[in-house]
Image 1 (tube, rainbow, N blue to C red):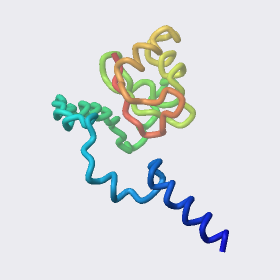
Image 2 (tube, rainbow, N blue to C red):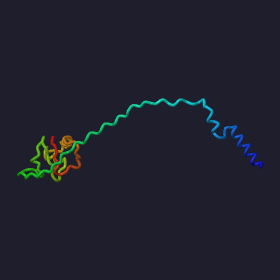
Image 3 (tube, one colour):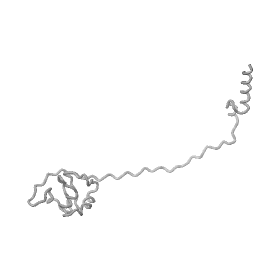
Image 4 (spheres, rainbow, N blue to C red):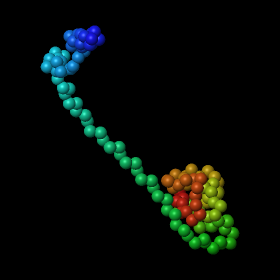
Length: 131
């Protein structure tokens, strides 16, 4: 019986010190209430500009030209400075520069005249613009 009385006394004191039900507190208005925050205006986020499309490289399969007498191996006789060149088997940009211009010095010019090509992966039949 003492236990029941002690428990009831404890429960009663909880209400006095604010440990009880929250129903009693709901009727009291708090003095620290703040008004709702004002809406914040944000500038619209602009979509990023699309990346420019890569320039395609024309790859046209062409018949191999008949070798002319005295022409260098690979059809270099058909290549002219300021024209175009069709890549032959075994060609590199350095080899093309040597065939057309007589030295390796124009490799950078060939690359610049053909944007979008991979200098390490030119393909047989690929048409290159010669500066």
